[in-house]
Amino acid sequence: MVQNSKMGHNFDAGALSTTWKLTLVITVAKLRKLNERAKARNEIQADLDPGLVFDTMSAIMLYALIFQPTAESWEAYVRRTLHLFFKGS
Image (tube, rainbow, N blue to C red; front, side, top):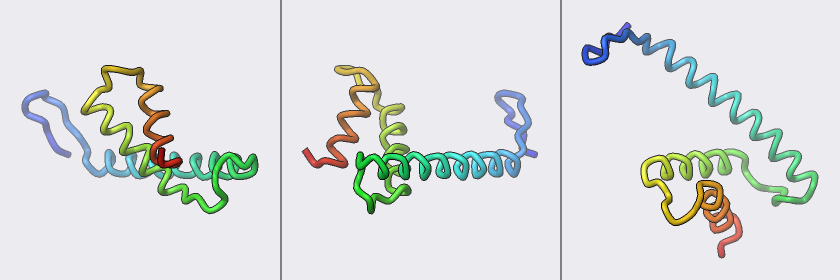
């Protein structure tokens, strides 16, 4: 248990780590199902790696949290970034 002296909160680093890992496992599993449905509808390439999609989406979201888009909506930013990444133009 770790105490944050500024906030006065106690944190169980092991429990937080376990929760984070479980969240990632569930998210990746859901993403795999989403990829399979998209492949079945020919919306994405058959050989697209779900890990690549997860890493890309995570990077886009983290970047947007730090450098918030101002000239466009969040949705437009994510769509534009994904289009550039997967289509290349």
